[in-house]
Length: 347
Ligand SMILES: [Zn+2]
Image (cartoon, rainbow, N blue to C red; front, side):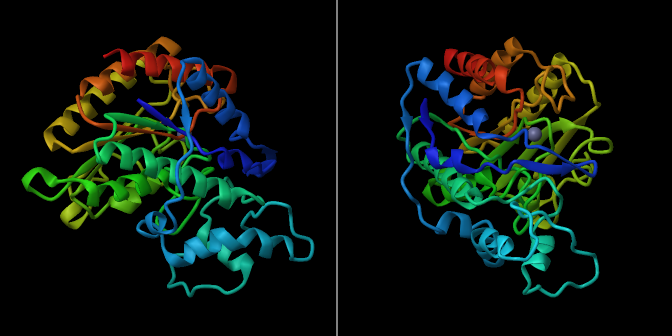
């Protein structure tokens, strides 16, 4: 197992976001990554800094307008009279045909679908660094240099769509990594194919959006019922892909308060789907916010439960890229990642 981490990911520090109409402290903070890194070094691991893969990998997933927006918006925003220190939209796209706005306020509304993706001075640098980490993990596995790799990404990425950020996410790191792996794979006599299994407590709506019409990337997600939980507007079982992608999106929403056995059973069912698809690489969107004491808690997974989850994923027997997503119980993150890796590496 190789561990990949870019220290620039620590630079993203928006102090707050808007939830239920109130400004609240950001639970997605650098201390999360510090806690996760601490357990890797405590296990005797070496944190490898990824090389700079340039703009190509992110441009293969996101639109040029969105990338230019993310890179430039903070400087333009803080130059506005009376602007806040972090970019937060106050207009949003409607269903009517939209023209691309030139003003920064319009662009913030065009590209940010909620008030949970505040953009601060170093947000772009941090999410680019995380994208390089995920890409590097994918390249190492796709080229056979290692059987498995863990990318310590922060901020998370799975809520970012092709051209919108939301839910603490800006670039979609797992999507960028999966896309970057495809040209490196042999295909074993057919077009190369990979699977992404998202075990974060929130539906991976951004990843689903990016691959919804594709049959070379199977997307599976186990998450809390979007009728009553973020991201609210995606993640239902009837969302199964479109066109050639029909049947290649598999959602398993679970009731709020689902216990550990229920969550692990849904992951087992998802891994059975993965086995039928027979991908060359299994990507995991690894969130620890299924933890029973997570501040965004919806499920009852315990620290020992993450060990079982790690064992189950390892038993799939596939080259695996683990990409860090959510998990906000900072004091328990190290123990939960350590438990997961004990299970995964013990198989
Ligand atoms: Zn989450």
